[in-house]
Image (tube, rainbow, N blue to C red):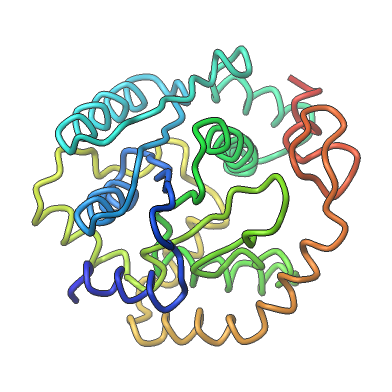
Amino acid sequence: MDIEAEVLRTIREYRLIEGDEKVAVALSGGKDSTSVLYILNKLGYNVCGLMIDLYLGEWSRIHRENMERFCRELGVPLTIIDLKEELGQGICFIKAVLRKKKNLTGCTVCGIIKRWLLNRGAKRIGADKLATGHNLDDEAQNVLMNFLKGNIFLGVNSAPATGGKKVEGFVQRIKPLFFVPESEVLKYAKRKKFKILYDKCPCAFGTYRVDTREWMRGIGYDKKRQIVENFQKIALPLRRRAFEGVSFCKNCGEPSRGELCNACKIFVEI
Protein backbone atom coordinates (compact mmCIF):
# COMPACT_ATOMS: atom_id res chain seq x y z
CA MET A 1 0.00 0.00 0.00
CA ASP A 2 1.15 3.53 -0.82
CA ILE A 3 0.35 5.06 2.58
CA GLU A 4 1.11 8.62 1.55
CA ALA A 5 -1.28 8.37 -1.41
CA GLU A 6 -3.97 6.79 0.81
CA VAL A 7 -3.61 9.57 3.39
CA LEU A 8 -3.88 12.23 0.69
CA ARG A 9 -6.96 10.51 -0.78
CA THR A 10 -8.62 10.39 2.65
CA ILE A 11 -7.82 14.05 3.34
CA ARG A 12 -9.31 15.15 0.02
CA GLU A 13 -12.34 12.86 0.00
CA TYR A 14 -13.37 13.74 3.55
CA ARG A 15 -12.07 17.33 3.45
CA LEU A 16 -10.02 16.75 6.58
CA ILE A 17 -7.76 19.76 6.00
CA GLU A 18 -8.67 22.85 3.99
CA GLY A 19 -6.45 25.71 2.92
CA ASP A 20 -3.80 26.75 5.41
CA GLU A 21 -5.53 25.33 8.47
CA LYS A 22 -3.18 24.73 11.40
CA VAL A 23 -3.10 21.04 12.28
CA ALA A 24 -1.81 19.91 15.67
CA VAL A 25 -0.72 16.27 15.55
CA ALA A 26 -1.27 14.47 18.85
CA LEU A 27 2.06 12.72 19.33
CA SER A 28 2.41 9.68 21.55
CA GLY A 29 5.89 8.86 20.32
CA GLY A 30 4.75 5.68 18.58
CA LYS A 31 4.75 4.67 14.94
CA ASP A 32 1.24 5.88 14.07
CA SER A 33 1.31 9.50 15.23
CA THR A 34 4.95 9.86 14.15
CA SER A 35 3.98 8.71 10.65
CA VAL A 36 1.03 11.12 10.57
CA LEU A 37 3.24 14.09 11.42
CA TYR A 38 5.87 13.07 8.89
CA ILE A 39 3.37 12.52 6.06
CA LEU A 40 1.34 15.69 6.66
CA ASN A 41 4.53 17.73 6.82
CA LYS A 42 5.82 16.08 3.63
CA LEU A 43 2.54 16.85 1.85
CA GLY A 44 2.98 20.52 2.71
CA TYR A 45 0.31 20.99 5.37
CA ASN A 46 0.68 23.52 8.21
CA VAL A 47 1.49 21.15 11.06
CA CYS A 48 2.83 21.23 14.61
CA GLY A 49 3.33 18.60 17.29
CA LEU A 50 1.33 18.37 20.52
CA MET A 51 2.46 15.84 23.13
CA ILE A 52 1.46 14.98 26.69
CA ASP A 53 4.22 13.96 29.09
CA LEU A 54 2.37 11.35 31.18
CA TYR A 55 5.36 10.64 33.44
CA LEU A 56 5.36 6.91 32.78
CA GLY A 57 8.97 6.61 33.92
CA GLU A 58 11.66 5.77 31.38
CA TRP A 59 9.05 5.02 28.70
CA SER A 60 7.76 8.62 28.74
CA ARG A 61 11.25 10.10 28.94
CA ILE A 62 12.44 8.25 25.84
CA HIS A 63 9.29 9.08 23.87
CA ARG A 64 9.60 12.75 24.75
CA GLU A 65 13.26 12.92 23.76
CA ASN A 66 12.52 11.07 20.51
CA MET A 67 9.74 13.48 19.55
CA GLU A 68 11.76 16.55 20.49
CA ARG A 69 14.53 15.35 18.18
CA PHE A 70 12.12 14.29 15.43
CA CYS A 71 10.27 17.62 15.36
CA ARG A 72 13.54 19.52 15.44
CA GLU A 73 14.80 17.57 12.43
CA LEU A 74 11.56 18.21 10.52
CA GLY A 75 11.56 21.88 11.47
CA VAL A 76 8.12 21.47 13.06
CA PRO A 77 7.19 23.24 16.33
CA LEU A 78 6.39 20.98 19.28
CA THR A 79 4.34 21.83 22.37
CA ILE A 80 4.67 19.60 25.43
CA ILE A 81 1.76 19.37 27.87
CA ASP A 82 3.25 18.55 31.27
CA LEU A 83 0.79 16.38 33.20
CA LYS A 84 2.28 17.25 36.60
CA GLU A 85 2.01 20.95 35.84
CA GLU A 86 -1.59 20.51 34.73
CA LEU A 87 -2.87 18.09 37.38
CA GLY A 88 -0.13 17.89 40.00
CA GLN A 89 0.59 14.16 39.55
CA GLY A 90 1.81 11.67 36.96
CA ILE A 91 -0.64 9.28 35.31
CA CYS A 92 0.31 6.23 37.41
CA PHE A 93 -0.68 7.94 40.68
CA ILE A 94 -3.91 9.26 39.17
CA LYS A 95 -4.89 5.84 37.80
CA ALA A 96 -4.09 4.11 41.10
CA VAL A 97 -6.31 6.51 43.05
CA LEU A 98 -9.22 6.25 40.62
CA ARG A 99 -8.96 2.48 40.36
CA LYS A 100 -9.39 2.29 44.12
CA LYS A 101 -12.06 4.99 44.50
CA LYS A 102 -14.14 4.51 41.35
CA ASN A 103 -13.06 1.10 40.05
CA LEU A 104 -12.07 2.67 36.71
CA THR A 105 -9.62 0.87 34.45
CA GLY A 106 -6.31 2.56 33.70
CA CYS A 107 -7.09 2.87 29.98
CA THR A 108 -10.43 4.58 30.70
CA VAL A 109 -8.79 7.13 32.99
CA CYS A 110 -5.90 7.75 30.61
CA GLY A 111 -8.25 8.18 27.64
CA ILE A 112 -10.47 10.72 29.40
CA ILE A 113 -7.52 12.76 30.64
CA LYS A 114 -5.71 12.73 27.30
CA ARG A 115 -8.80 13.84 25.36
CA TRP A 116 -9.37 16.68 27.83
CA LEU A 117 -5.76 17.86 27.77
CA LEU A 118 -5.38 17.59 23.99
CA ASN A 119 -8.51 19.62 23.30
CA ARG A 120 -7.40 22.34 25.72
CA GLY A 121 -3.85 22.23 24.39
CA ALA A 122 -4.95 22.45 20.75
CA LYS A 123 -7.09 25.51 21.51
CA ARG A 124 -4.25 27.08 23.44
CA ILE A 125 -1.91 26.95 20.43
CA GLY A 126 -4.58 28.08 17.99
CA ALA A 127 -4.97 24.81 16.07
CA ASP A 128 -7.86 24.43 13.63
CA LYS A 129 -7.68 20.63 13.60
CA LEU A 130 -6.28 17.94 15.89
CA ALA A 131 -4.88 14.92 14.03
CA THR A 132 -4.49 11.57 15.77
CA GLY A 133 -2.75 8.38 14.71
CA HIS A 134 -5.77 6.06 14.81
CA ASN A 135 -5.46 3.44 12.08
CA LEU A 136 -7.85 0.96 10.43
CA ASP A 137 -7.22 -1.70 13.08
CA ASP A 138 -8.02 0.75 15.89
CA GLU A 139 -11.29 1.75 14.23
CA ALA A 140 -12.40 -1.82 13.49
CA GLN A 141 -11.67 -2.73 17.10
CA ASN A 142 -13.72 0.26 18.31
CA VAL A 143 -16.74 -0.77 16.24
CA LEU A 144 -16.68 -4.37 17.47
CA MET A 145 -15.92 -3.49 21.09
CA ASN A 146 -18.86 -1.09 21.30
CA PHE A 147 -21.15 -3.57 19.54
CA LEU A 148 -20.18 -6.34 21.95
CA LYS A 149 -20.72 -3.97 24.88
CA GLY A 150 -24.24 -3.38 23.55
CA ASN A 151 -23.75 0.36 22.98
CA ILE A 152 -22.82 1.35 19.42
CA PHE A 153 -23.53 4.95 20.44
CA LEU A 154 -20.10 4.91 22.07
CA GLY A 155 -18.58 4.63 18.60
CA VAL A 156 -19.82 7.92 17.18
CA ASN A 157 -16.27 9.21 16.89
CA SER A 158 -15.28 6.36 14.58
CA ALA A 159 -14.97 8.46 11.42
CA PRO A 160 -12.16 10.16 9.46
CA ALA A 161 -13.32 13.49 10.90
CA THR A 162 -15.19 13.83 14.18
CA GLY A 163 -16.73 16.54 16.30
CA GLY A 164 -17.70 18.85 13.45
CA LYS A 165 -16.37 22.31 12.77
CA LYS A 166 -19.33 24.04 14.36
CA VAL A 167 -19.31 22.33 17.76
CA GLU A 168 -18.26 25.17 20.01
CA GLY A 169 -15.36 24.41 22.29
CA PHE A 170 -14.16 21.37 20.32
CA VAL A 171 -11.13 21.32 18.06
CA GLN A 172 -12.24 18.99 15.28
CA ARG A 173 -10.32 15.71 15.28
CA ILE A 174 -9.14 14.09 12.09
CA LYS A 175 -7.70 10.63 11.45
CA PRO A 176 -5.53 10.59 8.29
CA LEU A 177 -4.68 6.88 8.80
CA PHE A 178 -8.34 5.86 9.08
CA PHE A 179 -8.14 3.42 6.14
CA VAL A 180 -4.53 2.30 6.66
CA PRO A 181 -3.97 -1.03 8.47
CA GLU A 182 -1.55 -1.09 11.38
CA SER A 183 0.75 -3.56 9.63
CA GLU A 184 1.29 -1.07 6.79
CA VAL A 185 2.04 1.76 9.23
CA LEU A 186 4.61 -0.44 10.93
CA LYS A 187 6.31 -1.23 7.63
CA TYR A 188 6.27 2.44 6.65
CA ALA A 189 7.81 3.62 9.93
CA LYS A 190 10.57 1.02 9.75
CA ARG A 191 11.25 1.77 6.09
CA LYS A 192 11.66 5.44 6.98
CA LYS A 193 13.90 4.38 9.89
CA PHE A 194 12.09 6.50 12.46
CA LYS A 195 14.09 6.52 15.69
CA ILE A 196 11.22 5.63 17.98
CA LEU A 197 10.08 2.94 20.39
CA TYR A 198 7.86 0.28 18.84
CA ASP A 199 6.71 -1.13 22.18
CA LYS A 200 3.07 -0.95 23.28
CA CYS A 201 2.18 1.18 26.28
CA PRO A 202 3.53 -0.60 29.40
CA CYS A 203 0.10 -0.26 31.02
CA ALA A 204 -1.79 -1.81 28.09
CA PHE A 205 -2.42 -5.33 29.36
CA GLY A 206 -5.44 -7.22 30.62
CA THR A 207 -7.89 -4.81 28.96
CA TYR A 208 -10.90 -5.36 26.73
CA ARG A 209 -9.10 -3.65 23.83
CA VAL A 210 -6.08 -5.93 24.16
CA ASP A 211 -8.38 -8.97 24.10
CA THR A 212 -10.23 -7.61 21.05
CA ARG A 213 -6.96 -6.87 19.26
CA GLU A 214 -5.78 -10.42 19.79
CA TRP A 215 -9.09 -11.84 18.60
CA MET A 216 -8.94 -9.76 15.40
CA ARG A 217 -5.40 -10.72 14.42
CA GLY A 218 -6.68 -13.26 11.89
CA ILE A 219 -8.99 -10.80 10.15
CA GLY A 220 -7.63 -9.41 6.88
CA TYR A 221 -7.54 -5.90 5.48
CA ASP A 222 -10.69 -6.23 3.35
CA LYS A 223 -12.81 -7.41 6.30
CA LYS A 224 -11.52 -4.67 8.59
CA ARG A 225 -12.26 -2.02 5.98
CA GLN A 226 -15.71 -3.49 5.47
CA ILE A 227 -16.39 -3.23 9.20
CA VAL A 228 -15.53 0.47 9.42
CA GLU A 229 -17.17 1.40 6.11
CA ASN A 230 -20.43 -0.34 7.05
CA PHE A 231 -20.44 1.45 10.39
CA GLN A 232 -20.12 4.80 8.60
CA LYS A 233 -23.55 4.18 7.09
CA ILE A 234 -25.18 4.48 10.51
CA ALA A 235 -22.62 6.71 12.23
CA LEU A 236 -23.85 10.09 10.92
CA PRO A 237 -27.26 10.08 12.63
CA LEU A 238 -25.62 8.76 15.80
CA ARG A 239 -23.09 11.58 15.64
CA ARG A 240 -25.81 14.20 15.29
CA ARG A 241 -27.49 12.88 18.42
CA ALA A 242 -24.18 12.86 20.29
CA PHE A 243 -23.70 16.59 19.89
CA GLU A 244 -27.27 17.61 20.68
CA GLY A 245 -27.49 19.57 23.90
CA VAL A 246 -23.73 19.95 24.39
CA SER A 247 -23.11 22.62 27.03
CA PHE A 248 -20.02 23.58 29.03
CA CYS A 249 -18.53 22.16 32.20
CA LYS A 250 -19.20 24.47 35.14
CA ASN A 251 -15.77 23.64 36.56
CA CYS A 252 -13.31 23.87 33.63
CA GLY A 253 -15.41 25.37 30.84
CA GLU A 254 -14.77 22.52 28.40
CA PRO A 255 -17.67 21.11 26.33
CA SER A 256 -19.80 18.69 28.32
CA ARG A 257 -23.11 16.84 28.19
CA GLY A 258 -23.73 17.52 31.88
CA GLU A 259 -22.81 20.00 34.60
CA LEU A 260 -19.35 18.43 34.81
CA CYS A 261 -17.31 16.99 31.94
CA ASN A 262 -16.01 13.43 32.26
CA ALA A 263 -12.55 14.70 33.18
CA CYS A 264 -13.75 16.89 36.05
CA LYS A 265 -15.92 14.07 37.35
CA ILE A 266 -12.77 12.08 37.99
CA PHE A 267 -10.55 15.02 39.00
CA VAL A 268 -12.58 15.58 42.16
CA GLU A 269 -11.36 12.17 43.34
CA ILE A 270 -7.63 12.85 42.87
